[in-house]
Length: 435
Image 1 (cartoon, rainbow, N blue to C red):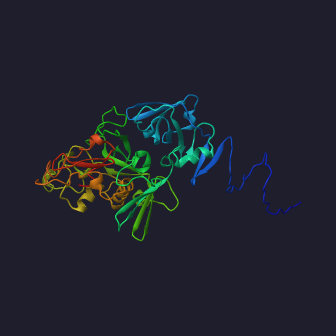
Image 2: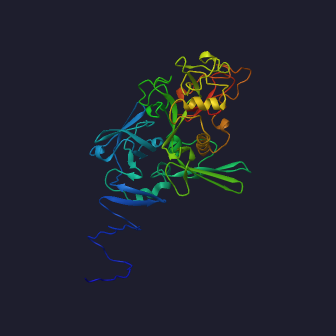
């Protein structure tokens, strides 16, 4: 047997044709340009993509109906290249307000896709890419130069996997946006396309097994997400919850300055927020009641108003810690005057995985708020809600407001203030998070 020992070589010129590189033991490679008929690797601004036949999709038409968007493109093969749940990036067309991240709800045919939410206007000649786990899966080829315009508007950086946040100087009470939001104004919200984590929050109906039955209309919770079918918010179909996608976060503290960053995807120095680790297992979503807690009386098999006095509306005048439940439904006065142990017990009675609102989940929502508004004064940014009530009593329709006042806001943020029973606030579909 002949054996040959080869010393390492530095190939600094020439052409390699018809040979497999890294076929057994792949390693990293650095290229100034890269062409391939199949997969290509593109790196831009420290973001790497596996690209499957990517192409700018021109002449895409749109039909916006019932809270969804249908996009069509002749000559495609969507039934093969796309699946439900793939992420769609819209970054071109005549309506810049619609630039951002969508999700595929239905693959209608080889030439049509239905997205999960509506565009704000009619879009023609729309450019889009489809991602799956960081993979773009459209047409023919994409050059590095197509991605290099991330900062000049060619492709919005905020619509790609990115990190964004805010720094707060506690001594001077000043704020500065960071990451992909650098140079954006503080003390206000921003367009959804700039806030991919917050924009993904939405109301849904969740059964006691923790399964989403259907999503609610983006701008009207009395409708389902198609904008046509009526939703049922009284508990018959399940609990009305706000779904929050898992996200990653980073915190820093130097001198008197605190810095927070968030990202939908893993990033260097970022960790999965602890709210998304339940019983030691990472979860894709957390759910918080869209409304304040409503009592379900097992003795009468009905949701009840509890805003009159301590437990006096329960069957027999006392709460049944073994069988009564905590719910999130519209049209009732929230529970009051129970102990922490009692609230914990009836929350857990709903089933496996259900619990009273926990510290980590509240912390996650607070983090989403501060990275969105870049200002701690939430009552100035969003509104007073029910914090200005006076001269009343702790009964239904006085200090205790019936749930569902935010139904017309859907997944939005809004506030009605003043000394009125109509007062409420809602943040991204979470009614009366404060006040």
